[in-house]
Image (cartoon, rainbow, N blue to C red; front, side):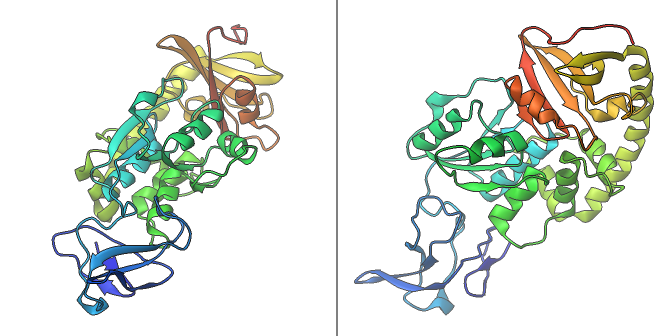
Amino acid sequence: MEVFLDGDFPVEGSKCKYHCSPTCHPGQIDPEEWHYGCLYYNGWPGYQEGDWCPFVKCGGDPEKCEAPNKITLNPKGETMKCFYHSSDLDGHCSGAIIKREFIDCEMYPINYGEPFPWDDIQPDDIVYMVDFSLHPFDDMLKLNEMCFLIWIDHHKTALTAHEGAIKELKGLRRNGIGACQLVWELLYGDRKVPYGIQLLAEYDVWNHLNRDTLPFQWGLRTYDTNPENQILWDRLIDNRGFVSRVVNEGKTILKYVNQYNEKYAKAASFETELDGLRCIAINKGMANSQLFDSVWDATKYDAMLSFCWYKDKWTVSLYSDREDVDVSDIAKGRGGGGHKGAAGFQCQELPFRMKLG
């Protein structure tokens, strides 16, 4: 990458990129030492508004400055941890972008219903939480008091809970776009979003207008998308040709998946009701709304419902493409959350009757 410090500064042997805003200049931090740096800008952990942040020794001459290998949003060098949503590619991609920028960051996969490792959190930690939030939301406030928390998310119920909280949390949150694109925006500002990240972000909010979105999702599921597999993520971010290859692989997979989903749905679906919603339901884990394509009828049903026994509890997922239905309200009322069109919760006993359609 390149480094931008009031201009372009090359970084030998480094993949660092830095855009310093609003103003960069040499600064004398003691009688004999000058550093090149800039004023605080939104997103830097460990600094207060207006602080001057020194980066590199420059003798007062910005033309002679060379950025070190570790100019990132962690200028003070604290221990970094990243908690990323482990159940989908939006979460994996979000974690991968963090890992790409902060190579020494400790990665923590996490999913809803799993215990949070409170004992691992230290006061000097910088903690990124991406595409995920703790429930209840008071736990997010608790975590924020324990460390320097940067929270990036797009789930409607979490954003609503944050609006009602007593404290504003640092980070970036916006409904209507995948978390991986928000992570990219926070770290790189206006730099163009790579096509692979764009496709993952669109899929996660059910924007399938781009004909590459669905096949890319299914093609990528055949790869090891662990955020620490940076060889893969570098190819997806830097190599448009590789993205096209994954799309082509996914087209074949998607054809099979659609045929399988149709057979399974017609054999296993049934009608039921949940909290006033008329649902078409299927007992299947690790599913998505595409499972219901052959049986979904928006004139007959309010929502699609999939459920399975996961470890020690039931996991229930809800989907709907109806404008007058918000499944996140139902999920939130049962201790879960999500988006308007897709949400979920966990329970010990199923809150609906199973009957043949």
